[in-house]
Length: 431
Ligand code: EPZ
Image (tube, rainbow, N blue to C red):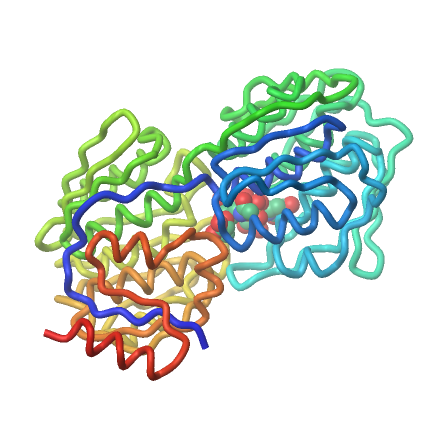
């Protein structure tokens, strides 16, 4: 029963170094199999989702040589399977990136349909729309997506919905299609740009990534490359919220401040100090947060993956804040858990009305999903008393050494597997 046990009330102070971006790495690992030459990828985050993706890559026959926790060499030369085992898609949705990668390289792919998850239904109709536009025949039978194409030819694709996954998946399917493909209404997240830069380093010809129009000139083949993943903007934002909520003073290193602009702007509105450096930001938490309103939007708007963490910081403000979740339909599951800690949030449809409280009080809670789990840890660090967080497997999917990084900032948190270990923690931190 692994869980985090936390003794709250300690302002976090010191320095933390951010790991590579999980959501860039998942796309890049899929794209890596599109070459028959060696691909060296550095600054991988050592998190569960990445390790599952690497298992899936070796399962289809690619050579995977894990040089160290953060570095891997991949070669797609010996891939003989164009179908991905159901086990992987059930464990991580991002396995659906194999459709774009395998279709783009071999003109064939068979990948189980990803399930919905606990933040929404998460359809893939826009992915399929893009594959069909490029000339693939796409069938969904027995819960599996099969995509086949005699030839892949350029298309002018307009996404009805701004979708990170569809943008990355269709970009991969198009890089070796004949002619010039245009993708309109594309997602603009930093990880889209990172995947495009990675593919270009392999010899692809992609322009406009990071804008809503991406132009791709198909090439014959993709060669080997060496590439380092960008820092994780959501991990960085999570630690920024942690510093604010605990009234701490934290230097968050190995970040790209431009990727954090929406988060920085909101934390400053809430009364916190944020100092920007070339590759770091420093957050000095306010004594009391000021209320403000948040609406999640595609990048560069406020990121949906930061919504739960920000709602925790807003819960400690002196007024009422409105949090509007416009991307997913079920991303307020943490509200019930927070109410056990004294949180005062009412959800009406896709809006959460957050009434500020003086402080959280520690309680046993359970992580409903990855980012909500991180938000509950922030609440526990800011709370009076002890908090235990269950289902931390969700958190470990996206945060590397989460409890170690927090402890290094003075946070009183430990990963425990038994009541005895929890009691030992309490004895250690008492007083
Ligand atoms: C990616 O999910 C991220 N996951 C999510 O991060 C992130 O929340 C999301 O982008 C938005 O930024 C990875 O990159 C692995 P979308 P993705 O397609 O690609 C609808 C985390 O915490 N949609 O941009 O699945 C969809 O229902 C995770 O790290 C369609 O309607 O998100 C949603 O409402 C959680 N049809 C909206 O678009 C489609 O074909 C945005 O989804 C595709 C999406």
